[in-house]
Image (cartoon, rainbow, N blue to C red; front, side, top):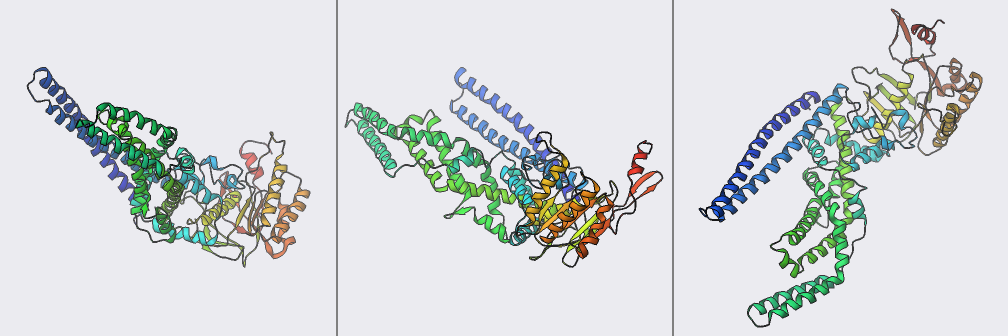
Length: 594
């Protein structure tokens, strides 16, 4: 594959050149429309003011103006799509340069009461979600957020990996998907979703048959009156009878039209997107299944939507065209089209939710495939059905620029220790290490590549205490909030999936004696429940835990040193207990006399 930065730069340049060409065409067409409008005015004056030309020339001029308007509208649409494509690659280059924070939709709405999203920066500003999120629909963002928030079982993860791997090199398809998905704002919980989930009004087969019979009688009476076989008053009188018959279902017909207004506009927005998805050949089983979900009863989604939009368009034309409206009303054409719209709702309305689900999943796959394309050295993890195990070489944090991130090997479970007690001074990298492990577990169980040269792991559920604060509103101290969180983590450790514990500065809100006793009891309970993971601490008394827990726990640490009066960190994890603290040095560095 082409190097991502070079490929993005080439595509961005190409789109900017295309936009410039389209802008010139837009200016030319705008001037042509002004000229055409002037020609129409001149022809009107010549035809009716001077009687110098036939009035039919007005029709010719109007048709020419209409053709220019259609071509101009298409040019404007191409400009808008070109601008969206250019913006897509501008943000992609920002991601590669490490300037993506705050430039995308961060997904704060997904935080809620998620047990570890805040701890690991899964959602919110400068989060994993913001980094990955290229989705443009509500369904796409919700799907991606769901995958990041809840780990999948191994079979699903493997299926997602295959789909992501197939979409990774398909830049044209991913570009089309992003550009077309941004065409409008279609919500899976808005008017379209409510309409598709609602029951159709329902008309018996007798209704269209009766309306057709009424229309046939109208045509027959009109012909008979034309040939003076019956008086015209009979045909006119029949129209009142026909109107009275149609009024029996008038209220139900009106309900159909009131409901379909906004949903059909939303469906029209996704029709081209669905058509593009349907045309893309796929191999991965998950992608094949998604494509198959767009076809029901031999009719693909895009064609079904085209049929509905055609019915709605015909109905609007039959009621709003002043020339034909009297005739279509007399023949009950709008009513027949309304019944056809309701029948479409009955036949295909239930499928709309599935179509939006397909769009959402493909956008989520595209987002992870984009990440995979931009980080070609990041592998998919090898998943072990039996655990717990987390065994990584050169593990890094995916939210830190690759040229700045320091990588470490991590081995938990299997033949390695179950728990690592990680000591070190302030700012040495302890919390970042915990987040690196946790975020890579999230990526792995979502089906994405991970930031490591190799990762072998079993399914794990995360339990973290990296961001805990007190609450004035709830009257909770930080220590009380922490022990409530730990209790929830202990409960989670008793589940069927092994726990990955990431306990940062465990119980640091209490005294050293209680902290040591409490931490030992908590860690022992978690290890007995099958958990693996990290505990960080500034309190060197807690580094005695491995000697009490036996071979299931080991000490490791981060170091720092003073160079030219500055604190220097190498962020390398080493065996053993840290031998000094930088707290006094930091206090002296800011001018405190200690």
